[in-house]
Amino acid sequence: MEGYNVSLLGQGLLAATLFMFALYAQQRRTQDATPVDIGWAIGIGFVSVYLASNGQGDLYRRVIVGTLTALWALRLSWHLHARRGPAEDGRYAMLRQQWGERAQRNFLLLYLAQALLITFFSIPSLLAAANPNPLSILDGFGVAIWLVAIGGEGLADAQLHRFRSQPTNAGRTCQQGLWNYSRHPNYFFEWLHWFAPVAWAIPHDWGWLSLMAPVVMLYLLFSVTGIPYAEKRALLSRGDEYRAYQERTHAFFPFFHKTARTKDVSAKEVTL
Image (tube, rainbow, N blue to C red):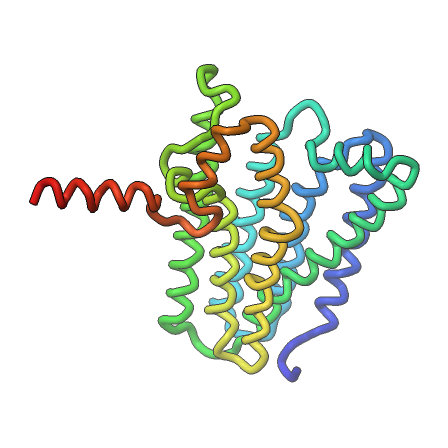
């Protein structure tokens, strides 16, 4: 892999491991694993900026990669911090209860796995930072993807926050704005964001490996964390209302309701 300073990735892995071990030590003291999510976002931002700063590719592209990745990490980590409650996140509280006496051992493995994920999701930055080609329309396309993804995720988060801040909506399901077209628009735009570094990296040699990031992210959201737990918790707390929401609203990719499209067609037929 000529042109790619893979040793930088090893340095990033070491930094991520030390960072996660520090967060694990904090977890042992506070019995609260919630900050690991914030640490994941910060870790990717830090390692990616380090890789972009020390890359061998086009300087302007490296500035774009480092700046936009840092902004993504700051926005996501701040959002995760702002929505923290006084108690441990339900996912980790459930795991702590299930694991019992093995909790601390398993949490250590979980935190170390996060260090590996930080390093893995920093690989697109390494690949993009090694691209020596001058900026092209493809780079602009990557920036456009980033803007749409960050804007969409920020809008989805703001709409959900506004809905939940109204006392009359307690225990109800948000079906406003983007949440009318997807049950998890925030996850969709987070996934979309990972195609931006693909556009920056793919023209050069091993750049196609950057496609691993959105593929693995999609798998994690659908099968490991994200959607499965969010759906389970929503069904427990909102019951039939959420089941009805599931039936008419797509889980991930934003699209019109099937029932809404049927009504529109019927209305047109009546009008005609």
